[in-house]
Length: 139
Ligand code: TYD
Image 1 (cartoon, rainbow, N blue to C red):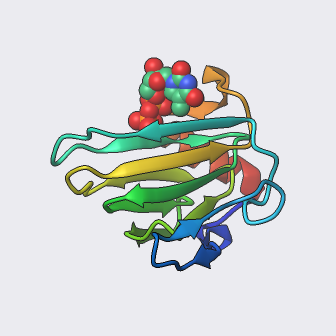
Image 2: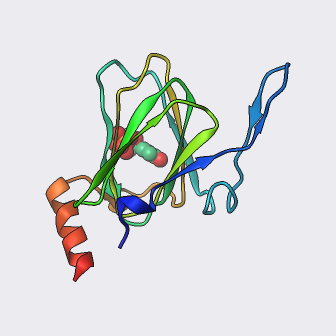
């Protein structure tokens, strides 16, 4: 059973250069799974919230490539808030955790890597159903 303690901030490599800096991430290395999917969120209007849901199987890594936003993760018992504001920090979120994204700055750009192809059946979008899933996992 996953908990908020399984969420990790990953510091990505950085090549600082007068010509401009470079960072990277490789699957099965900085990203701790094989990448099946990449998507990105951009042009978020002020005050909007994204991603109120959990994944049954999908693990993910999120990077604030530009700007900043908060990622709030909950396991039903505890929740933690992470502010992403550098392009060389990634957050790893295992499957089975509720997560929302909010407080997007102007021109922020969230890049997300997933361990599973897109599948609506993998989403838990109802918080009560999520709580029940975590209770069932616990017994
Ligand atoms: P959704 O998961 O609701 O966005 P968020 O959780 O970040 O608020 O996805 C929005 C729409 O995009 C939804 O209709 C499904 C579609 N979508 C895909 O087709 N493929 C994908 O990989 C993702 C993440 C979403």
